[in-house]
Length: 203
Ligand code: ATP
Ligand code: MG
Image (tube, rainbow, N blue to C red; front, side):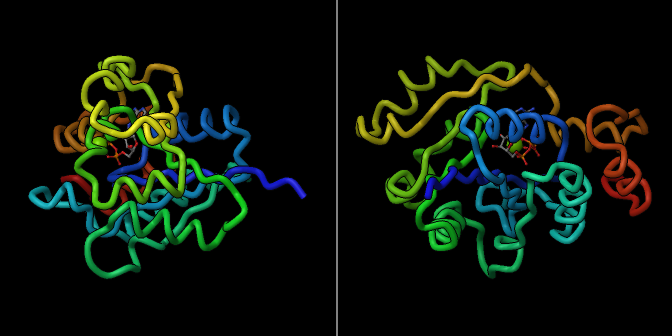
């Protein structure tokens, strides 16, 4: 029996937007992923100073966004785990769930840059591939030369590049637009847009 690889898309998803969704779909087709699990973070270790929206809101907006894609699933693993959300624990969880499948941890190239600062990054790279999606303003070739050159060669090989349609969408920009009463139409799924207004998020 052939096992297809599994994708893991981690993020704060505050809110989820088309940048995340296009990236996950591009990874799914490029690496023949059976499923992509969207994992909203519970207590992001890198965003301590900034206020993060209630995880239940972020999880529900994620579900609203992925429910039309049969290959996309939402996971509550980080939001139900107490303490800080470390990618290491999440990847280990999925490795246990899918011991025979390759795992692809999908992130934007900007997040990959922080890789060296991540908790137990060598052990993460033992368990999965990293997909570094291009995002406007980040050069993947430079990234490999500079930030990541401290990593051993066998780990560098586990970081694969993925070109996604250039999307300058970010959650930060969406939150700012809501605060300033600007339109967020076409930046994220309509259901998420309405959800944000219904619960008066980002005001
Ligand atoms: P914020 O502005 O609050 O940091 P964000 O838009 O970067 O939010 P996150 O939830 O932090 O969204 O991102 C989750 C993952 O998705 C990260 O790996 C990030 O690099 C990636 N990502 C975010 N936006 C895009 C985009 N437009 N294109 C490709 N990848 C993206
Ligand atoms: Mg971000």
